[in-house]
Image (cartoon, rainbow, N blue to C red; front, side, top):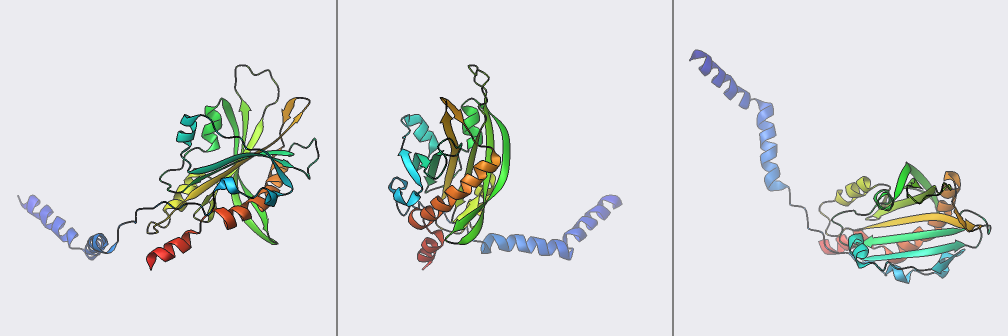
Length: 258
């Protein structure tokens, strides 16, 4: 009995220690002081991606604008706006592996998840991922160099009809999340949730792949060539997206707070 009383007394003393009382007070106050996160509302593009100025892309020329015809694919994509364009770099040599570019941009105006990264899409389409590297693009924005994170992937065919040709190819991508950049789904999610009290939020994925056709067969660039070509492409396309298409979240939230 004495042991039980002694243990009970010690337990009571531990609950009365200053450190415990301070922690308990902070937890109690947080329930009253901390406001609940604001539910995000849709934030549309300034201008649809379909209206992207083709002439402003020079020296790139838009060769084609294929659209996704499968409704199930469109639904699973979940994007409110997208473009899938094939570009041709008029400055590149005719036989250059970076002469052509498949550009795929998606926009999500009410982001509650981040679907469809190339790592999953290409492996689901019958390709094996060989490489996944974080890279930093040095982008020239009107004479000012800016470092932007991106991702470089390499895939190879695993199709049973594969005839032994070297079909390794690279895919590159990055996210723009509330006016900042990220190079992975995890970093994009972190950026989306960084300001839990903002009313608006969005993200957009820019994905691209360089290629060419020689003697009826596809050819693809190596890593250094792909990154150099990417910096040229992004120096043109990102300023257009930032100025003409992607919304400015801080302005929208500032207006809403008044």
